[in-house]
Amino acid sequence: MEMDFNLYMNDVVSSARNEIEAAGYKQLTTKEEVEETFNKPGTTFVMVNSVCGCAGGIARPAAQHALHYDKLPDQLVTVFAGQDKEATETARDYFEGYPPSSPSFAFLKDGKIVKMIERHEIEGHDPMSVITNIQALFEEHCAEV
Image (cartoon, rainbow, N blue to C red; front, side, top):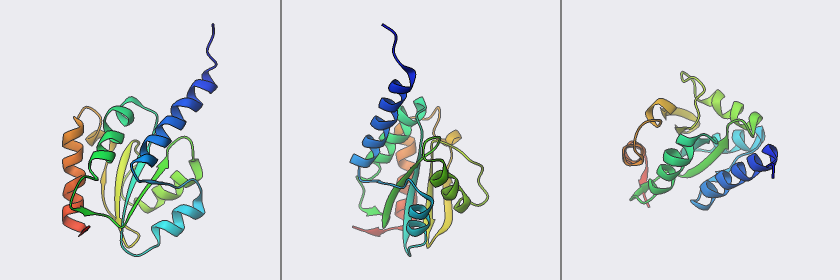
């Protein structure tokens, strides 16, 4: 029995979306949603999601578990590289000084990039070290919840 690749990829993408959304991240799928969200005052933590192994094995678990912390950003959002192309491209316009990278994380304050955790800081690292990096951003820039 031959599996249809597109059907398989739709399942993979759907699962990846649901996993990060269930953790509390809002999906941004359009340019307008990105602009509206990123232009709000306060702190915004962005996961640039993807279907690669390091996204599923490291980045998404880290994005979920990093939220078990005393300080959190005002907004938790995600864009999906390779899927929601316009939203991802618009988000990357805000990540000035950083090349496109997925999976990755971006921390913004009042719509300005503060720090990125790029793919090379995720791939080949264990989830706990990525969680520690995320929580260090929360500690430095976020209020207690």
